[in-house]
Image (cartoon, rainbow, N blue to C red; front, side, top):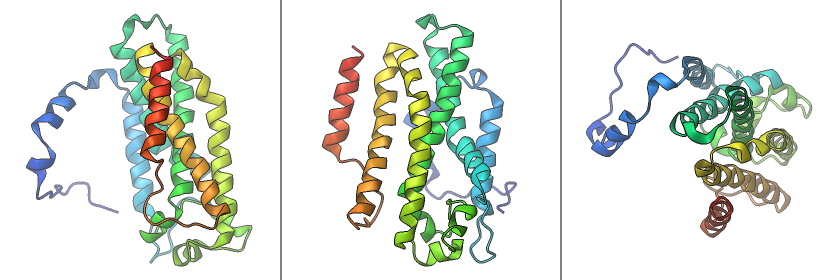
Length: 237
């Protein structure tokens, strides 16, 4: 585990912390953000730090661990994002009860997008000694986490990619309607982001079906992203 009391040493800190970034940060109304999601996000990062292939430490043991991780690193981000949306668009006339329902749906959507990330990045994660596929899943095929790290192209892993995508799709279906209840100004950008991730899920499927294991991160082609963005922005004019 890292020592959080030690100062972070970033050689090019001045370049990273540009005046543009600094001015953007000052616009974030921290008082409008709930503390709990931010603490849980840090807990998600702590789960990442628990991985150690040398010591054979893999914290994602069962479905409950996978769901907890996705909620912490992605569901929490969705909560904070939506809290900011409702802060900046108070004239949307959305009741507190309805806002709460939308935030809960957003939390589920965040988890869904994290499952897409995991399904896409099995090989990239294996390269840094991490396996987010639950150990209980791997045991069905008599696979160990170290086997995934040693051979992330193992065709048996396709089964788990598909299961991860199915979890994403189930959450997507159960929460996507909430986007239509958001203030009009943010519907297009949020819908574009969500559907871009679901396109990646489709690409993961086709990659395995065609036996193509891509180098680098799988991305939606620019023309498809632009087409999707135009369609969603136009729909919310």
